[in-house]
Length: 191
Length: 395
Image 1: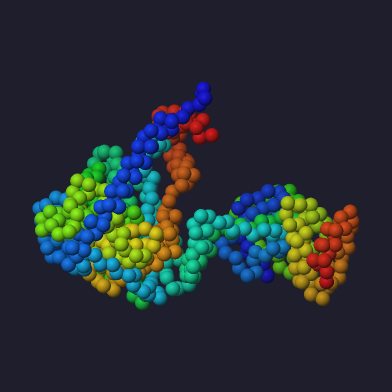
Image 2: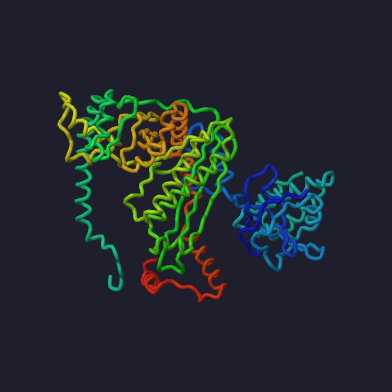
């Protein structure tokens, strides 16, 4: 099932930011695979969910026995939009999935959806996009990839373990020069 | 530094700033010395409401525009009543873009922000804005003269109460008590403003119509004045002191120095949540309100962080249950918001028009003008030259 995350408010070829109103239990989730339809379907991983503060909010936060209406007001009416950071990991064009950067970024106000299990399986059949994640060193890249892989394994049901083993082999190849990093990452996705 | 331009040369005002500090300190000292005396008077006259009412309506009382007491003891301090479990607060506040004859076109904007806050509902409040653009001949050249800032302000106040009235009446369902709240005095004062006579009459009429509708709908309204500077109760005490016998053992009248004590200093004995006795506003404008059954009363309230003045019409002042609702709800809202009602902060936040929003609006107006074949609109030469010259300072 696809769930709407929000709409693009800023974008570039490598990353984009989605604005959404409130946090739902299912979305947006760290590591989730999402897509934007912008001629081509652009895939990305949610790497950040950000709520900004301001002096008003900070002051309200210090109040004792705060009534729920104030909290709801700050969350639903003032904390808008919640900013969701997405790292671009590939795209689909004419039915083909590519694990490299799309020719164009999504446009502002494009709607972003989560990907359903089938689409997630289809996108993660190959691992060429790992490099795009691992090279984003200003992000918690390893945590992001691990969270994403755990989710991608989950939707595979009984094929979960073999998927994680394959992913682990690919990581071992990519991070052969950095055994400490590799070890930490494998520890996070161990079946 | 050569070439540097500094419009306000701070070095040239240092002396004046120093003197200002001295002056303010002297005023504060005077206030501290005089307010206990004023409080003695308040206690002395506390139960002589009838005599004071006569004084307030006497020629002298009307001349100084002093407050007139209600029936409560003048030195009363009433604690905040219990907040009901459910109550709906509806608030409105406005902002405006004043007309600028050096701008791209003559227009003004009034934007009213509103909030419906359902205390006890556990639901997010509903917030909204209500912008209006004024540009017709009649709007920007009322009576043939360029619209004044005073008129825009008066129209804004009217729009505030109109939007507030419509909204409050529409959300009030009879099951949950509801109050309407405005920022600033409920008593509007148009006489000495730069507003054409017939406009004054029309604005007042429409304003009073709102109060009538609220009264008919059983919906109490209040105006909240943060940091009031008025001294109408002090003025009353002064006249009373002069016209009635001087209380023994109480200090000499303040008279000449009276402006240095405000009602706020007088009522500083109120504890957080407590309100003062009710008084009737002494301003001349209240006569128009009185004539229509909406005499404006006020009380002072310790909001927990400051002393505020709350204004209510007579039909709220004389309705004990409504008055308690207003008292309890305003204090509850102030308690969590640094001494100012939360709903008013939020209504203002909705209403405020930021610089970049104004620029976006002007760009749209410019495009609309161009699309109707008008020459590309531009600022006046004066505004253009100012912008150029100020560019360096803005960097």
